[in-house]
Image 1 (cartoon, one colour):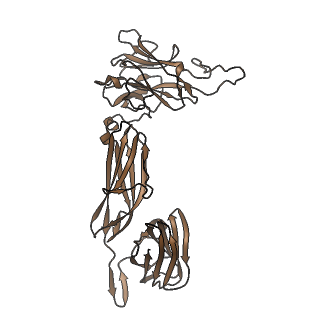
Image 2 (image 1 turned 180 degrees about the vertical axis):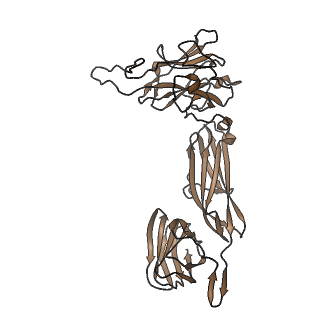
Image 3 (image 1 turned 180 degrees about the horizontal axis):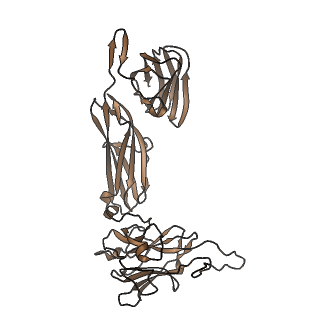
Length: 444
């Protein structure tokens, strides 16, 4: 079993103790460095090799105390063909340090000169002075002390998008061909389980993935307000500076709803924002909604993607007049008994609804500050109240209310700032399924 070095006494194995200065207390924290990922075979691009070290301990490590040995075992002897002294740097707990032989390797912390042996058996060993701290033998067993268990069958296939890596990070059973396996490269990032379709991680044409959803997914003719959700995912290992987000080919979404730019998406990170838009159309139409994201990666390459969804235009409820009774096939706007179900209203349009239950909620958006007046007419039950809120459903603020007993009411709330508002109609009388009341939000 390969012996590991820690900063406290183990019952088995060796000891590495930090000796305190006079008057100082000996540290209890542990430095535990491991080789975490190695890309030794790049085919026609040997200049893109890298070695990644991870600190799995709970204390920072001074890397200048360590060095790497590159070992050739093909002759049956362990021949060290290059020693790489690590630079003066501190590696925090849980962090990565990447050594590369080309500046084209992303997240490279230190560039060395030379080529890692591409055929085996060969090994990379992490040394504390002349003591082996960790070692990985590939394509066979490199003579002692440069193999943990066995390196038989452990090989980088030479594809530019793969390496040999631990998964999860730092996994160590002291068995090279168990702890390491071919995986998609992730220098300076958490190793991932994926071992196929790796090229998209380095291809700017596949770096961004935009998905779009709408709520509600259908609005009655001629249309209404819809809340759109845009999710932008970085599918690559590069950082992406997201600087443009547009809707339907032109609308700049910066500052619209919760959408703000620029956004820095690190490798495999994502960004989600919401905005409201008016969807107008005829019954039966599917109105497409497109969001396009554009950015640049670490190498100043443009990356872009678009996501689409569609909102259906449903049939407006048809009212049939029978003397002396006004009927409809079902209540218009239902269900809208909670804030989150609030039926969207357009400004300066008159709507008809039934007071067939106790609570009805409606939402309306003000595009800018202005004077608001709400007309609530023909409320036959009379006993009830109207409350106007501002904000979102989980954080509402009461703006005004009308609790008088009357058939016709006008609530003049004066000048109000831009934003989303909710109107709550509370009926304190028995349900009325015959007489429709009207609701109109006048603005400005």
